[in-house]
Length: 127
Length: 127
Image 1 (cartoon, chains in turn brown, orange):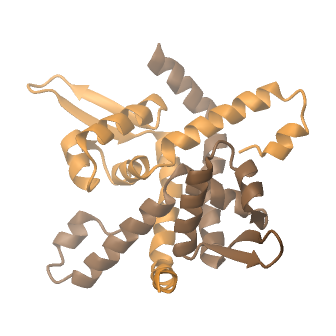
Image 2 (image 1 turned 180 degrees about the vertical axis):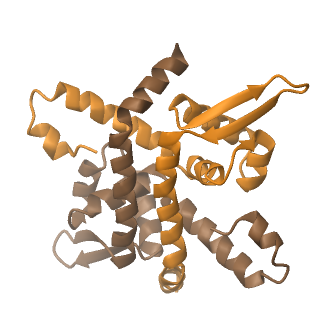
């Protein structure tokens, strides 16, 4: 992301400013727990809505719907409707979605690696 | 993170369950826009509260305070108070915080790389 310092150095940086504002928007779309857990779950395989709800533990129907819509709008998740009765709806990661998943994986890996550090820090803080 | 399927395969996985619950908690603490932007800002250098507020554009006093407290409790941010008048308070990333920053960097890099893809996807979706 463009830092404020970089922007100040560019008085004519209108395009950069627009790109930065879009980058902030996109970052907001994906930098939340549910979006990241959805991307992580879809990294394994294509899933239906009900399967996703089971995989992303604790997500409400509303939050899952909202986040899937945002991810679909940003082109990270592909939504396919099959004309069966009842219609089957499946969600798959797109190529940009798969690329983002690699960073989510790194974050999950970080969580595992530092779990004991963090637990110890919490105990110190709470003491 | 441990998947539900893995947990079901381990009827005696109580320790794993506890670790997984903690991992989910930690993931929730850090997987939000403000926490990630704070970590990104502190990746450059030690900052005071007021400097952080300028760097993390759009963050409210309350959200910054709450997130810094959570990050300090998890041991990702170190808070130092210098006994000046008025007291100077500085925030620095710890080693686990710096390791997390690498994954945030990857996410920011992803945002930049796919910005045009995402913009095009949005235009198609909104049309």
